[in-house]
Length: 287
Image (cartoon, rainbow, N blue to C red; front, side, top):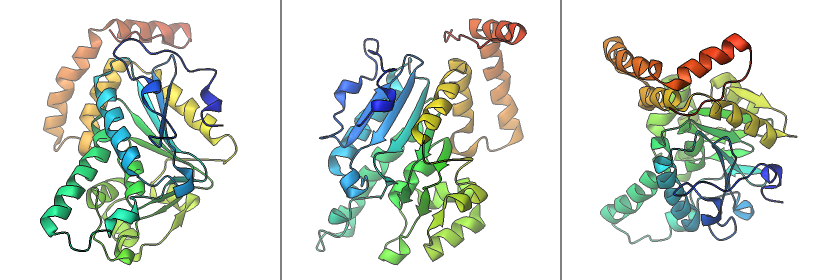
């Protein structure tokens, strides 16, 4: 059943924090769980439509991203899909559902859709896309917008916009070259080819490949590891790497000359040094 693998680890969040009960997997098509480490696990939960980005799912995603941005107790996020797919993309029922709509009307509609889904990119903690099955079109962009991507042996990736007669959307022409480089992005966009898990690994679409059995547990383990990092340092590092990193080495060292001393003045630094000396796992408090 949904959420069974994390049931033993879910906890009641602190006041004003992301609360899983605010998201109903059935009506919102989005399930949310969290553990006492600060890890939040998000499941796209519309398996009968291969986790297509429905209206309820889109609204819930926007609410979740806003809550994650304001919750200092969150330390990492894992996003995966229910059933056999990661996400099959936008709901094609409304993409071509209004043939009389003007360009301006369609632009307004699409901008709202893009901004809602890409808002997860502004979450200040690391986001991990755990690609359990097919990631298609705009669904592939959910994975591209994450900080880390891993895949099961059943993972697939395709951006078939041109085959559908539509220009790529949801920042595909920015995110895909950022992840795989311009040459591979051109190939994937102009051919619309479906690539399997091994090829995804070779292209850098994912950085690690896992067996399908136990994939959610592997994703959770990675998420727990990332959540275990010093939270102030992790948030500053995410800010440094947002949108592909700094524009120049000078800009980089100017940032690091401030950000690194900030972390050197934290109690977490002394905890990290002590834990390394004592050969134990650190217990970071975020201060």
